[in-house]
Image (cartoon, rainbow, N blue to C red; front, side):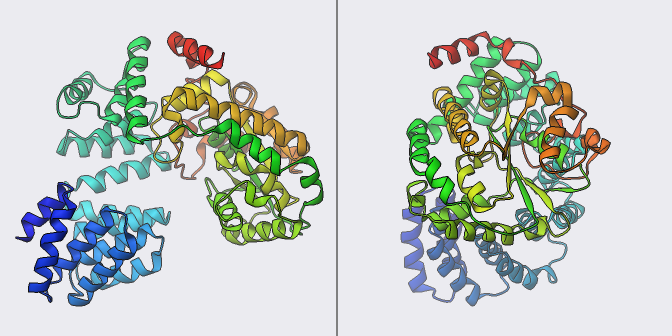
Length: 503
């Protein structure tokens, strides 16, 4: 009976499954599997408090049940209640040290915490026990990519595909290395998958566009790119955001007078450097170069600013800030430094590369008089095309519609011009194209603002051991990557569309 109910859950027939489970619950109140399945349904329906209630009930009925412990730990991981998740794993890891599912899920917990070495060990333990565990092989591929070991990454992805060849996620992961060239047999598999049960699969459509571009079949590549983005945008049921109106609302709050009277007087010897701009504008490369300097720590993409804006602004930015005073901005500055202390424990300067922080530049600079902003800019056509070619893991949902993507680009350009007019000495503009051709001069312009001297090690940024989590991971582990420079010139239809939309 429970097998049939599990099948209903897999088919997303949640109401039918719940009805049957509630009947069984009355009949078998001591059966731990019944509340577990109710918890699983609640998880799938994003009803977290209800899921926790059912899963705890199941756990109390059977504290040695591996499935319920994994479900409950997964919920706590989702809620970032990491210590509670680890407590649960302690109850089973000693008893099942060789269980690949336990090791894989513990690895996922460590990965979520960005404890990469421990995560990698868990996945290696999983494939030691079960060499064909596809989830662990795939995740090891992603970890190696982030570490810059691209050959090892490809090896793991190939191993996973040898076991289970029909995996759209892995083909996209290979395409997303940017430097990978698909074999003819791999192209045939991708085409046959799109012709069969994976028709309109978003990952495969992006992948096919990628390899057609590699083959210099730009018109065909662009057609698949449009299909991929249309499918993705429709799947989001998204209504285009009013980017122009949003920019005007920000300007109405952060007026010159407002900024003049509300600069916090926070005293610190720490200088956070916020790298902002459009995604795919070269921000990862800039951070990689800066963090190669002996006096700068690279913190990568931190979410503290959006979280603090939400916390202090009660989720109604920018209007919620209109009555702020310097004392409240001071609190934001203090909270930010407290949250980021692991990144500046041994450094006076650290980078926070969260490109979308460009909406919050006013709040950032008012909250910390020592903060600096680096604005990463790139050719309009190149950066828009680069976003349009990318299947992002999260955020950036505007990018799957060319019209909304252009509106977002224009908003970013306008709001950054506005911030520069208010804080002319605290925002440094770095042009991606100039970094490619004259790296030293561009980076020196940032270092001089930070009162730092140039170090030759900045030229060897690709040798860093830092893990890179963005789509640019493969490129910034090479010497200057120029293959995407003026790529838009190959796409006449794209240029035409952007020009028409701009007009």
